Image 1 (cartoon, one colour):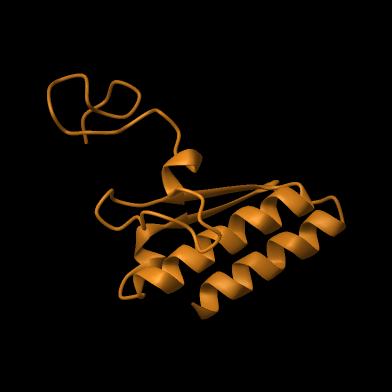
Image 2 (cartoon, helix red, strand yellow):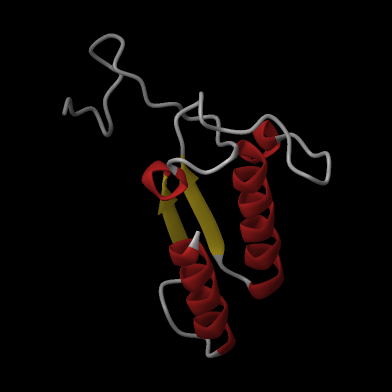
Length: 99
């Protein structure tokens, strides 16, 4: 979670300077071995800072790693984009490509 805190801090600082890419991306590897409650709190905190500071917070998680609800009671599903990547069928790749 140290990397999470460092990344979030840098995103806020760069946002104040109106520089940087305007987004923060975290992969599921960052949350590997993290308790579900702590993961939910981190996702909520990231969403709150992103909304307040004007950057986009993007997280990629496998569906079995995503918490059901955030600490404030909102459903995580409310923040999930409708696009789903899957390896089922020939059209399940990213941008039409199979990896």
